[in-house]
Length: 142
Image 1 (tube, rainbow, N blue to C red):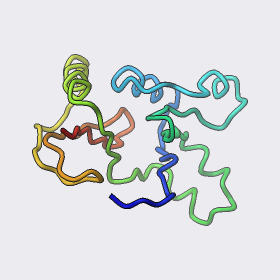
Image 2 (image 1 turned 120 degrees about the horizontal axis):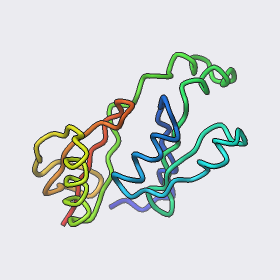
Image 3 (image 1 turned 60 degrees about the horizontal axis):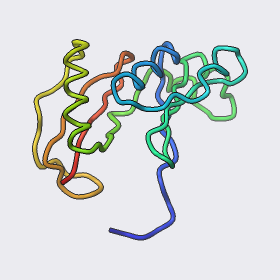
């Protein structure tokens, strides 16, 4: 593994309803919601959910794009999610996530095997969509 100072800080996902999106990520993945009360009160532009100590997912409403004039083309990016994000879980959390998604009738792929990622090959992985159509991959490593 390389040793350098760059780390992933956050990923911004475009969502129709940031509060509902935060609830989905909390219920399904157990991610901690951040700034939801402040967003609802109009004090911040978007809420987030915490992936780990160093990484969050920002849940940006589509209307935020129009307020980003400093970045050319930002308004055009709303509604165009990234291909997918991948979250690494412990094996038991991976199994629990699949069970919760099934319980809530969230469509998901079959389990894949030996998918390459940042830590090498993951023995199991699968994909599902959040309520806004963003694709999420879940995986675990031994």
